[in-house]
Length: 322
Image (tube, helix red, strand yellow):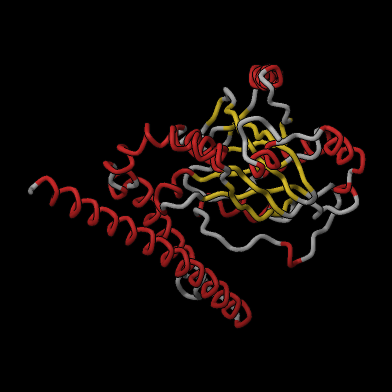
């Protein structure tokens, strides 16, 4: 048992070189593209990833995952950010970032942290958790040379808007592999400007289930971190902090509805045949059903924000007036 840790903590944090070497030698993921099925993320790693992605504001940020694999699961124990150049739609790791990563891992080992880098994470601010074409190419390259390797995507904007962490974990398929229809990703709310990129590459990867864990030692660390940020959480107003996101959501819904209306025969002013008219109606109805789903989700999110703001005002203003 590791000194100072409970038996539960020791099991999850112990790094067994023999076990990990055997996993590397067996390479079971080469026989089954769906070998890895789940990801277990420590509460501390989740906190650090989410905070880093939130600090990126509207720009994409990137970092690395440290941990191990057990059976068909990735165990993410810790993370660290990378000094990368990010934009609103992509993040690029330059030579300096890779040098920083190597130096960080070597320093971690000197400090007694034996976990290897098992993946990377980056943010999609405001447009959901999925893999773009560049993300797929990056992940596929890493899976070819540094297996086992995992990709995690976090949407910090939706996280703040909904109050729950919007996170997804993914792995790409090997070149030439045709996934079954049942393996296609489920529908999710994607901005109109990103739908094409989302649909084109959705057959190149699959998602893994994500769950979180918190051991006794992680509870101590999180308590120390929460002491720094609890006041800001209570004082913040979801309606004000998410104002830009809410406005963007409503505008995106309008654009999607207008696009669906143009598919209705006669709306665009073009002459269509009977077959074309039927196809137009069906496509329009299908798109409007998706807009309805997106609108319902947005309404629930906004209602939660409004309710939270009312509760905070009621509790704290009534306390001040006493």
